[in-house]
Image (tube, rainbow, N blue to C red; front, side, top):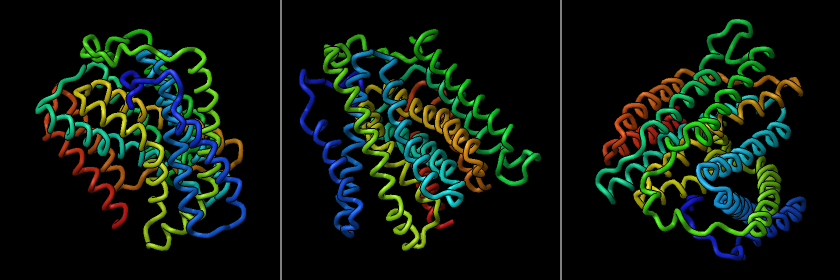
Length: 365
């Protein structure tokens, strides 16, 4: 499903058009409280709309070319995530002060340990050892580490506002800093140092040179992408009460809601990254994974900061000590495992073990 490596037919597949239509139809019946079976249908509609959204983002991305392709996909996925968080914050009010933090932290842990771990393990199990361009990955990790620590760790140690909070001026400043860091990364990725992010194997890769879709098909996909995003946001909003009830009924902490949101949003892009790794395209795989992590935190935090500042709600950003330890461990391990430009099953296993610990300690704190 990687944008540059998928073969796009001249006409869009029926499912990619039907999924958002079905999603909107299911939304129409959501107000009638039709019970548990209908909730399952809504979940299916949500997943279908997410997959269709990413497919259409890939069509547009294939038209605009690499490395803009991974950028379009990352922005589309982040737009879904931001819309979900903001809609749930608006629905839940003050009770959802930590939702953005939980979702962004979950996205980082899922990508940095779960998706990257699976990619390294799957790739290495098929090809023994894989290589990638170290310069692009190093730039991604440095930017991600800076934004993550400034937004999720530093709030615990500032003194203007007591607790895991930023004051209004601090929050506005950090939002701007996040945008500057992400914007600089995008400039480096797409203009100044494009070659850092281009896979060397693309030269001999037939899929990489597949004919892009026509302008008409790309324009239709652009319109359908907006339809899909609308369906995703509204379906998620209608499912939010059921999700929170389900999490509470099994006795799990509220942070699990953030993990579920992040997992749903990242599922299609995760599948794309794993497919690329299995096809021995680890550079594309890491571009997708780390690019979506950067877009996730670099754009989500400013978006929820704007919501917080305009509505006056308190935004809880600082992680607890346990989460901070796991976050810093993840960055140390990622820096070491991706620091040589070559990977084996060892690195993949280490990342997946950290991810398993994260999930277990979330449910059994």
